[in-house]
Length: 231
Image 1 (spheres, rainbow, N blue to C red):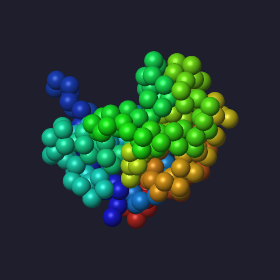
Image 2: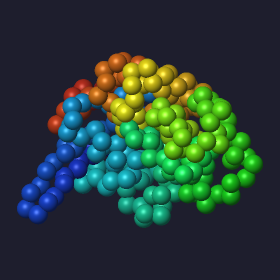
Image 3: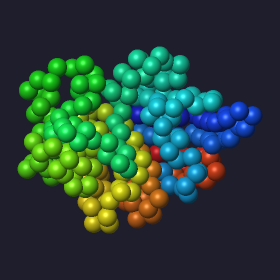
């Protein structure tokens, strides 16, 4: 079973009498454990597609399945549950809560799922922080962490609920070259060890080359033939 199956996704933004088509029929399938780059120029529709794939934005038309579940037409509470159980998110800007510790930030999706934060969840959070190289920063407030460390916390947070798919929008775009390379190595390692699929939007060709497959988007269309649009 695929972790993401999008078929003929379109998105038209309407502002008064002006209609702006952003996605023009995107079809993508991502299998478990896949590591896929989504590349294209600014304004090509990459972030819009990731938002739709993450059920944060509703398409104008098309169909979307997450881990075998039909995502379109669900109520907001059902969508929130689907996102929490099956998806993880990593953004260019980490979006941590600065006054909370690294561990508390990692455990935020657990709070969101209304689970009690018991010893099992705390162990999971600590183990992920160790895996991302922050064993000595577990109890540090996010405000005291460097940019690269904050992004590592965000990666651990994305994985804490053991999602089938992580959507990453320019996850290294705010990092220097050395930190970017380290984060990519970490993502690949975690994808392999956790069995999690990743779909990463990036402008960086060096980042895309480190992925198993690259999908190229231009003007709201994938430029590769349909046989190569399946990851």
